[in-house]
Image (cartoon, rainbow, N blue to C red):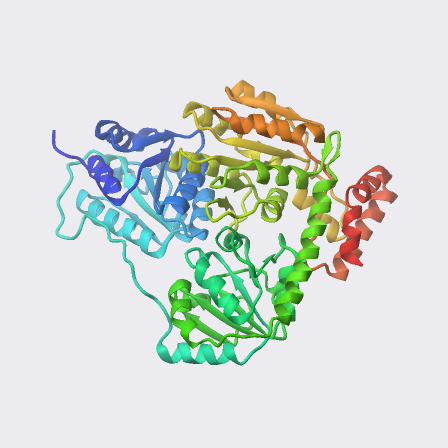
Length: 578
């Protein structure tokens, strides 16, 4: 039988290193599905919702370098979009196959017809519709090359009738190229950068995901400069471990120590970070930024000098030009402050909470202690991000995935699916919020169907916790944030996985141990304190005033019980405001 376009698609995906396609099959995608079946080298992962498939592909691409998902016709396309936005903003090389109606139906408002070019334009680097077999092969090669080179999403529109046509050989390449280049500033620029660094005494380094392969170089530079090292959430797992100068995260989820260090320095060096929160940047010190994407320079802070370069390559070339600093007073001061911050974090762990109000800090700390040294964590957007950011420690082998740029809810469980399939030999632990899990709960069935040993810990605070906090600091009484949840452990059991409910603090560790040793998927439903707060490192007077105003409005509305619960749950934070 002659090779058709669907067969060619499978061959090109396999050659590019793709291992599976996350999809819901149907109509215009059926020929591709059959080609995958006949070839046998790709796995077809039948997710229950295409958004789950896109999130799972994004997770696999972040871990392994490339992944693929697919959606059939209009509804399938629309379902892909949120997960593809997340993948694109996370720098994940994802190939999305958007199969659609036959070419002769284009423009007729045919059943389920959409315009993929318009639909995916804002969440992709490459987005084309292949209307002939000759177009398909060239577009497929280009799409894969764009994804791996620019690190983002490529969308290949594929009409159903084209998938059945005979494949055509093309005169251009059908394979793809993974380049390995040295990227750093020029010698003149390096001399300029070194002079600037050598001319300042109190230096702080702040690292993002761009430092992922530069841990040793960052540590060596920090020791040369006697400089504290802070990091973003995405930079944490690469930078925190074996780093004597680290002072934690800053930002909405971070700690006062990194914020303090950055604001006490006279030179701040930003390495591989597109940290978005300008209000956390110091206004009165010199700032230097290095990034492989030159278009990012200066868009988050008043940068005095910007350089284009890979962080590992740039530091390696820079180190011979940097003088060894001997005065470590600034570094010692910041590390002492960080020590006090860590002691304060421990007080939240030591106070474990009470029945149906288990402190989430204690739960996260317990997970950190029990988890494997190379575990992969996925965290839902919201309060789960806070607990993961503050209590899960890097080992140099662990990974943490979340919707850190796009900020979508319901990301953690789908990302855990992708992580478990990509790395079946590693423990995968999902920090799921009750709000996030409720959105995509159907794909618990996918976990069971593919026998993925994912451990899902549901932090059930019976509310949209982060939204509740946002409203309170704005001076608004929280309204329409409460959630009436099912017993998630029973839901898990109905889906076919082990389910455990935890209502008392003294049962948390045993439940987690039981889950982690179980040979299969487990959902641990933990009833956490709905009034637990996460204080950002920079607490403005307006936020304090807003919280007080919110509590006053609740009292006037007869909600004194909620006010008292909030105070009792967060008395420890008073020390942070004094």
